[in-house]
Length: 356
Figure (cartoon, rainbow, N blue to C red):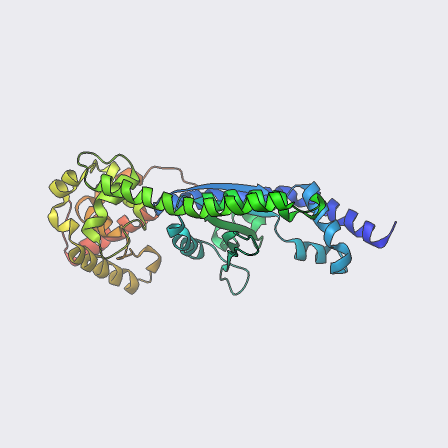
């Protein structure tokens, strides 16, 4: 058997043995991404994929001669993209906000930093419209426990793009990128170019549509319809910050406390709960207490929806603890429960306001 053919066979055999690990990795990272985009009120669809054995073999065959692999480890280091997750956003304005969330949540291959590669290949003469940001991530060590212990150090690529960009990227990849297809004709290139312009203008139209939707929701009254309605109506009270950040836990806490409208919040928490500077100063005082105890992981973010959370903690800390206690023992308790317990200690130690 030729040397290259033997190397291909050994590489494929190894990938067949290890593929379940990469399936588990992509599924786990996709689940985390869904939680994170929800938490930050980012409109998106999250999907995952794991390279098939057939696709892996095809990629090795295309590269084996030019790459001059020494052994199977060389093959695996070079191919790399076994696990993939895509976050398809509704609007381009959320792209870098999403990347920032990923940088905070995951680790990366170099010094623990997520590797970010912004790919914007807009070129009319070359008929290029590809646009996406690629993030190379690892699960943090604290996530690699129990069933996920064998995922420590395994790498996954997260692609962040708009739904419109994803449409063009996928069609262009299928028609123009794969060399075995023989390359696109002039007609195909012309149609890809037309589709590229449509997807770019589509991004702009969707952004305007969502802006109009926010304006309409901002002027509504009554109960919040969903988290996006919650964010739209409250962001005006905190115009100095991005209220969408950490909005998930704020919305869930509000629902659990039956604070289902602006009127409910003002009536039960008091108008001061919606004053930016007052809420910010309360968070800063709580965070200072946490730093003294070396519990910085529980700090609230004064540039986020935590500005409303601090008001709920001040008024209803016991109810929040009761609501989140008694859940499954497996895994770490939710952050809001741990923060609520710390806030209760802070309130008692400082003689602060007690639940009424």
